[in-house]
Amino acid sequence: MGSEAVVIISFFCLVFLCFIGILAFFGWIAKRCSRKLLQGNLREDYVRNNPNLLRNGKVICHCGNTRILLRNIERNGSDVIREHVCDQCGTRLYYSASGEYYADMVRELRKEACLVAVPMPAPSE
Ligand SMILES: [Zn+2]
Image 1 (spheres, rainbow, N blue to C red):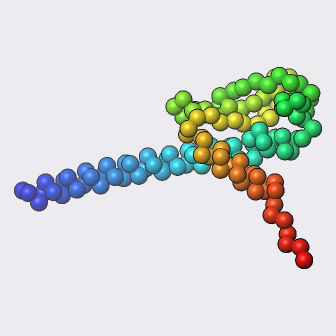
Image 2 (cartoon, rainbow, N blue to C red):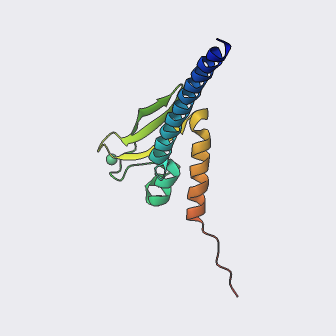
Image 3 (tube, rainbow, N blue to C red):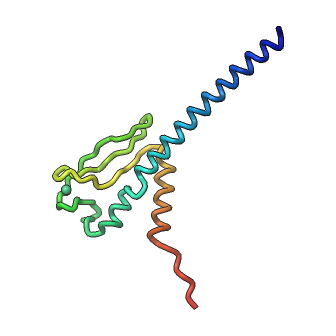
């Protein structure tokens, strides 16, 4: 009788752990997707790729329009990824993310972009 109860409890613990594992896995997948979305698509990336499209610290579209629409495209609680779209020609300029959930991701991507943009100088002799 006693050992049967142990088996049942162990089984439910195992199911519970699997459930937690699956949740963590999906969380990880979701975060990977968000990262992929933001990678190379941040405001910094846009400015670096289009230095001529920065007027007085304001990003403009290649069509010359300065009005940019914000669209929420991903939400995680109160944290959000926004798409910045030209309201004249509809071109997507860049993405921005706000909130704690995306903070580390954005910091990491900025750091990576910086490393790519400013490569280590070759040792000269
Ligand atoms: Zn435009």
